[in-house]
Length: 109
Image 1 (cartoon, rainbow, N blue to C red):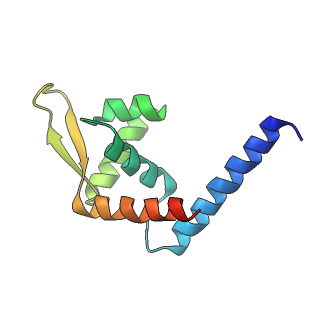
Image 2: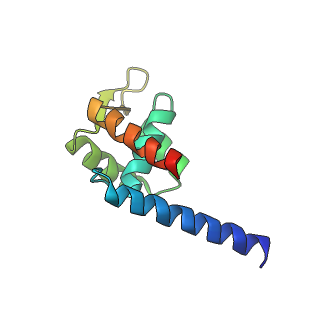
Image 3: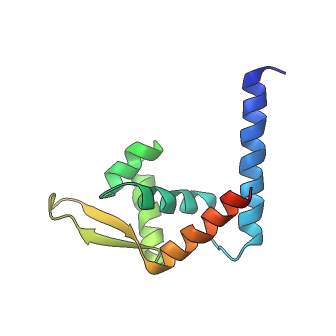
């Protein structure tokens, strides 16, 4: 087996195991939602544009994702004082709880 195949298989198994653990937990979120919450917690002064660049996704897709996270009360949007055209994203208390549970899952794997 080539090293690229081994790495691909390892990543596939890891993603599958994380997905299974998330489904068994009380987190009612997709991996994309959890990844987004994690990115918001890691990026200083996080905006939709920063998330788009970091995740390599379409701007419209990220905007829909942010809207879902805000509607689920996982993310808070506040006006960016440095740039009136954008909003800063931060985790709500519920978002912090979800990311804490997700990090426990990652650590256990």
